[in-house]
Image 1 (cartoon, rainbow, N blue to C red):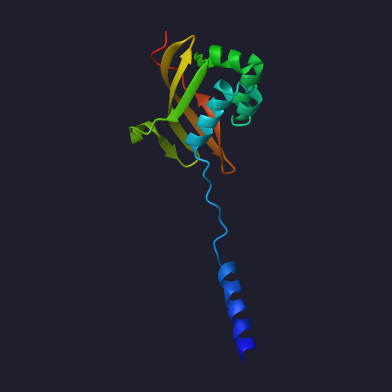
Image 2 (cartoon, rainbow, N blue to C red):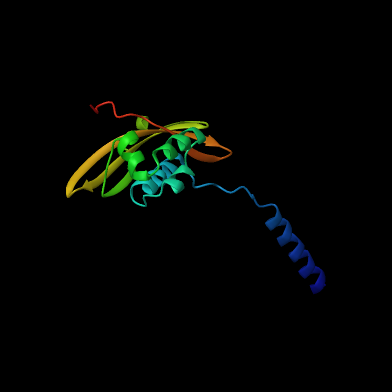
Length: 144
């Protein structure tokens, strides 16, 4: 009787474990990807790593500049010696996500030649096959 009870207990446990939800919840959000993208550009100065988080069109543009420093200085129009990048969550209208598209606002707080610089940029994101990619860096409307 004990053997039968043990076997039934093992089978029941296997059914319970086997019926679990195998779907993995991805912590990869558009904000995480955008932050990692700019971290690769500004802190790691690794254009190759950043291009893995960009759409093919943006990757082609990035590689045409040759280095992360050239790309960030000319196209993004921001320069830093060191920078901290945060997703702006102060106003939910600033972070819009609709299905496979998202618009994320990022706050950059850093230094350049000893001076403190605060900037804000919007980034348009696309999701392909469950992974988020930087599609476009929106130009600063207040820049000259």
